[in-house]
Image (spheres, rainbow over the protein chains, first blue to last red):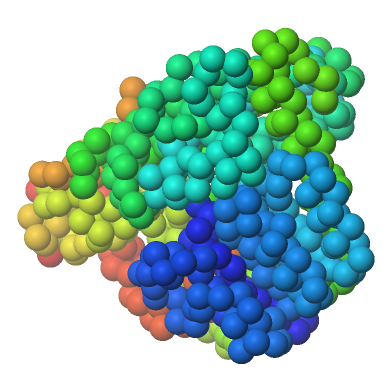
Length: 358
Length: 241
């Protein structure tokens, strides 16, 4: 298979650095260029010494490397539409970050644009390539726990806003400035926007779509940010499965400008735990554990040293296969639309104080 | 051990990562103290040290190499299995002493009783290691182990605080009891952990054929150390290298 000539764009997304090793090592890829959203992003990129040239303009990158076939759009959410346009106009395949956009009209435009250009647009929801989730899916499919009654899941992390400031900006993260609810000084665009994974996961584990959600925000752990950092969601799927999600930034962090050892204050900076209750049994699952643990440098705090973190390998493999074999990725724009609609419904519920239909 | 499928997976990794060297996994002779399979490259048998490519040990080593832990003093290892002898356990744990302790074994003293062995090991740079081995778990019990590195600055361990047995990623509770699953490798999903480690070790060797000679030398050393360790129980004095 001819390697896909790939580039990275913007480099301001928190997942940017996760791609570097895969892009370098996978022989199905030829990583030819990167472009940074700004000088700061370029300087951070250069710390990783990838040896791949980095530009400050996407147009310049495409001009210098007209052979680019695919791009990882690793940018703030409010930049995605513009950058997708740049790619679609050139027939360049797209790997989009987890939130293409929260704006339904923009989302429709993205779908049309991708369809018209005949390109692959895969959404980065890396949990699909997590081996623990794969096993979970198999166990459920085997029928061992029977019909699913209930799902509880956490997608809790530290807050990335200090390293990736756009994630604390209502405009850059949510796309516009929408107050959470009357009398609340905060805006949409925080922890919920960072954690679509469990909303996606329940859809493919249950084979059902969302019926309604109810959501509440709590007082922020970080009173100095404009967006919500603590939020709970419960609701029902159309097939009756009840669920409860915690997609909060409930783990505190050192306010580092560049992620580095010692970032976490709580030992485990990122957790996706899932409990599935069925008519014949229960499964409890830690998608990122067990690991190795230490209390060494730099802060002498008990810390989880993440030991198994391979999701990007499978994700990129699927992207390459879809490009070369003209297939549609599992997580494409159309599939992902319900997940985004549900997250918007969570915000609507916070605003109204009532359950919201999805 | 599904050798045919393991070799197919090995070839898949070679192709994916464009590794030129080729080799075939073959079963070791019965009674071997080392890994269950070896890699045959151009007709030559090469010993594998699969724990050296196990991610938890790579991470522990990174914590030492990256100075997250400073001034390591003592290693505390334990390994318990059901059946077989302690020799295989000693082989792996002694290698891990040198690998994670980053120094050669200088002395060993073992006390044994039945299918158990308790070792005090010194490394050439003065670090101490305790190695607790048992092949006396009841049949059907899952293997258990623990590897703790104690330093002036920091302690690292592959088991979390306040637990005595390995944790799993998934626990399933049904009327037939409890099942546990820990899957760590997407590319090799479906293989048993021991099989995955052998494939990964073989792939590491094909990616860097120079380690073949090194690992064969380590195997010879470990075979001697295990035999010497067993002899200390009878001799009543430590073996010193």
